[in-house]
Length: 390
Image 1 (cartoon, helix red, strand yellow):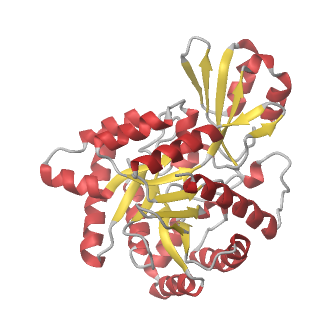
Image 2 (cartoon, one colour; image 1 turned 90 degrees about the vertical axis):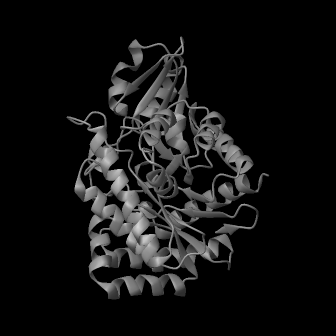
């Protein structure tokens, strides 16, 4: 949804909420969810799409031009356009167990580069209404893997920028690869990604290419879990001259003084589910931060700790201020980040990214389409209220 103001702002939601293992499924999901969502939103304006291409779907669209033509035709028929793509999970994002597999292959492997450029090539041939298109990707690798070769990651990201430059020369489409810092990854904080980004700028010609085609996906959930000050980190990106190619509007769980809130801790335990990785960062009363790879690990130790606050990487509805029983969310961080982004005029692509509806305790195992559509529409309304607050 394009919001009339200057600079242009486009609002969408991330298609990774829908299981999409093939090109046919992606097209079917558009036909299945876009019309009822549009009706709920009460809008006749062109609808921006955040498309999710798994590895198999991306290959199918590239190898079968008729499928790509169908996707383009479907978007036109639905009065929708391809704003951004999620190229973070390459495998089945709705498998029974995803956990750290979401980071494989990483940017040390050629398959990650090839997959990413396939997604960019597809996007370049789809209708759009933005001056550029963004493609989000994982932040290099995962720190707990056996080894992380930062030089190899740098090499492949440079090759990605070269590939995107070629796509622009061939199609006229400017596409920006948006690296998405995430807890536990090679670049998890804004400082880590900025430092690495600046190390890529070795020559003047390469600097132009990299600054044009490499940027950041600022996920407000991830940076809140890191206890980053949103205003400070967004201004840091602007000062470094690094594009915020898109902002993912998302929120995490947070718990103040866990040692004093047994009922809230019990409620938090219900979020320890088997599919996704839910990293935890706990702040001690002395201000030091401790990281835990997954929520169950933190829950085992919680009684022996004396934390001031813990933040949990679990994407919850952005309109939630709390999850009940004293369990809160990082919605204030989302609000602060959006406010700063609008003040700085550094973000055009805004994407709602709540993908974990089925993992929320108490959610129906097989939610009806209309329930999911209603939830997404409610997130749109909340996101719109934030984007209008200028």
